[in-house]
Figure 1: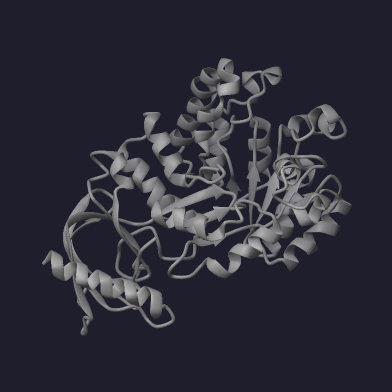
Figure 2: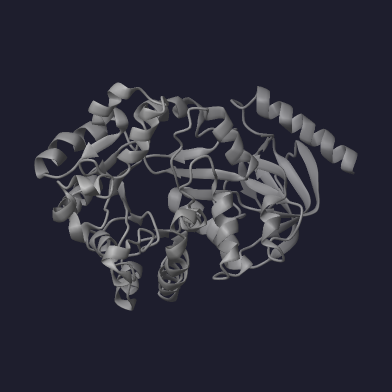
Length: 416
């Protein structure tokens, strides 16, 4: 049976390379342990035209035994920035890690255009992007782009051309009138804005001491959200402090791009970064998901004196409050040249979630947040026939989420 199985896989591999423009084969998958949201069930499943079927189609092209391996939906990364110009390497790393669905949270237009021909196909990752950032003058994330220009990764003359950077300065309503139509011309998938300790916006706006530590005018966020929603676009907001969290919620944004408190500044004190029960309850009431981006804690070596305080006194209490009020938490790494695999594995070390909760966050909640109008994230009849075959039970050991032996996307067999 194993020889037959691998011959079928070889055939499907050839189909993936040579016939992606054609319909995928109709496959019967036998002897698989399929995740049903609670545990794993041994049953047959079928893929027809890239869609799962629980009833056997009239015509089967091939039968594959999954040898009692564990089957889960592909993973999602709700927050990253795919700015590495080595496009194929980046895509292959995501496929290798089983992360098919990616929410890029802002890019350089030129580099985003390099990705466009290679994404959103059956043999690649599916990615959405806002392309641009709405931020303040000399605000985050311009420091990343300035460093890239300094190191020769992007042209230095872009420094004076904010739109080439993907940066839209939003300090006045006139700025919004100028930049918003320009962004819409690029056909973004959503809008990305930056709040950065917005309670001090007026203090930081023109003070060079706060270069890169500021964002857009928070008073303009409701108008930005209004215009985005009229254009049929969601709005995601980078936050640092509790004030940013509340400003985003009250503006009725659609996504909060970080766990509140990640931007701790000792000068402002802990209270400026710790949310309350009422804050978390309001976030849940408006059904606004929060992206984790917790693995930044691993990179606080230069702030060792703050590390335990940020982790134990701010981040973990904030996460527990969000859980208490059933806020949708989704997994995103926000780390250059990494995938959400690193984020999920790091969260597993914090002891906040059990393996079942974390698995569902990664392969169900996260993917559905990224693509809310698609049938993905579950192994059910009528859903896209995309899945990962694992060599061990992830509910027993979460590291088994990384032991991927086979990958299928929309009915095609993938080989990263």
